[in-house]
Amino acid sequence: MKLSLISLFALCLLASGCSKKQDPANAAEKAVVSGSHIKLPVDSPQLARIQTQAASVEQVPQQELVLPAKIEADPTKVSHIALPVSGRIRQVLVALGDNVRQGQPVLTVDSPDAATAMSAYRQAQSNIAVSKALLAKADADLTRAKDLFAHGAAAEKDVFAADAVRVQSEQALVQAEASFEEAGKRLSVLGIQPGSVINQYITIRSSVTGKVTEINAVGGELRNDTSTPFLTVADLSTVWVSADVPEDQVRFVRVGSPVSITINSFPGEVFAAKVMRIGDTEDPQTRTIKVRAFLPNPQGRFRPDMFASIRAQQGAVELPTIPRSAVLESEGRITVFVERAKGDYEQVPVQFGWQGQDRVAVVSGIHAGDRVVVSGGMLLRGY
Image (cartoon, rainbow, N blue to C red; front, top):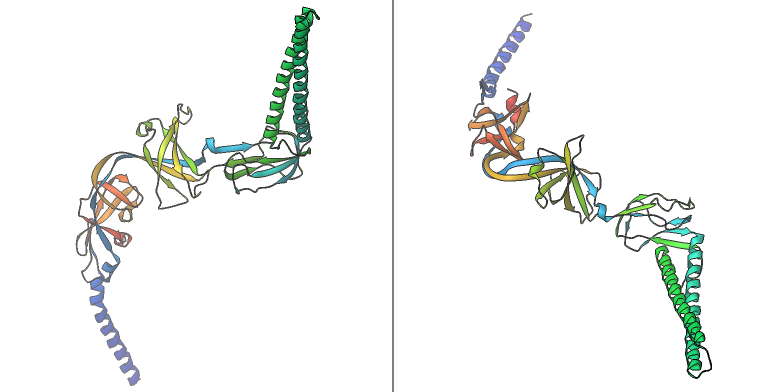
């Protein structure tokens, strides 16, 4: 019993000693909050988690228009390829997403119109030869009739008749040549060489260089519709970025003016573009006007229907700017922490002007040279 009392007393003394040793540490951790000021002891380990950066003066846009946008293919560089004749599709030679060159075969079709077109070409070619022979005979007959008439061996009416035959033969040759030219153009449309063997096979070729964006054909399919495209090829070396601009903000945009493009698929990157088109009419439902910017796409990174943003800037002004990481938002209130002295931080409400990807311009609340907390703001707000 005596030993137990001694052990209990020793434990109490040990606990009391540990408690007294922890008090200074707790005191060092204690922060003093006074209004919007938060003061941490200069030896607090929490200070290592707080980083600051000085606000710097920069020239920023006086006004900036930011609009949601979308990537579009340039409609002047999109080719919708349809069958020139009806027939049965033999084979589709490309796949969706393939890059094709101008003149590259994309599809073969079996069509009796091909044989008909070649036959018409050869018939027209033959008609020219016949017409030339008839014209030569008519020239000879006319010469003979004139000679006989000059020697009194033929009547004048025979000369007139021979001349009429010659004129008819000459016009027949003109018609034969026109038919031959038309038949040749028909072969060119079908992609058939004039000297080819007569058969029913036609090879359809791409009319532009670009990427296959749509296919609506299957091998073995019978197609009678020659107006509906079976293949779409788009040249995406340049694309358009289109946005709907509210009517009260369209004054900020001019044809030829530079704009900045950000694309959701490529965060942190900004691309330079130029306004190429401003719509002539306004959408009566949304009260907006369509604006399109020209964006080079040499590597093919930008694809139609990607979401993007257009930034149009006007004027310039010098304002203090701070990193976006310094900004704290809570219940509609925007603030930053400013370091007044080592361990002394003040939460200050601010008002923004221009806002970029990584930095924002401050109209009121801080001045150039003020050191703002860029890392650890949430820690301070927790006190």
